[in-house]
Figure (cartoon, rainbow, N blue to C red):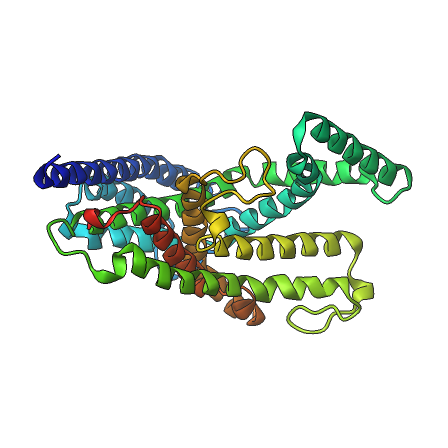
Length: 374
């Protein structure tokens, strides 16, 4: 293949990726119209009237009630046109990303994500021995050992399965009550992510026929990506480590806590959330470690094989976007509630961008984003 043909092929692939992002933005904009109509026609029961909805920014007091949903409908209609933006029009798509990702979002999606991650901890602990066992007989023996241990803990009263079942039923009822509200909150953040994706694609496509900046080469990306991944790891420590103090008599979070006043359920949830934060921080380091590119030796069947790049890039990019978007609502919440310790305990304003940079560097090094696209 000649150099010109290779360049044309790269340009075609870049245009196809931009086209997929534009299609996603167009479809998301279509959904904005019915969501806005829902709130406009049902101002008391709409998704932005839920008792938990606490907007980061509100319209002036004199604004009519229909102004906000009408604005959402107008934004959806405008998005149908903005999705067809050319590379030089990337500021338009960037504006959509900022408005929906940072200004209209709330802290609810990050709370949901945190509790979902906390739920994964017990599942990983239970399934881990089975996954790490070697051979069919080893996995059967590990599963039997885990089942026996869980049964024994239940018989001794260490684990109250009836209480756990009641708690899960209660939690399921609460999630059902939050269904439409939480779905729309996630929808807002997804919209910000889609518009951010389209903006990135327009910027990359706009760099065609230009020399590749040195900082976008795999060699440079390895250096600044390593720094970014360590920053992202460090951002996980404040919350995770303070939660770990709940294992000690000197419990602390935003100040000293009386351990005797922390009931068991609160302690378990706090520790699970803390472990989830620390586990996420360790995964941030995987962007620059060998085990982020090849499965480590303790992974049965997969060990030594290349890690599919998108298996790391897609979830990391989603989390980076989520952390970046909730930074403004989270700081606003901390100020409103006079709980400034949340600002340093959850440094999403550093964590999200750092993880995003580490993810981009990883994508460059793994060849998913290539210099020829720039």
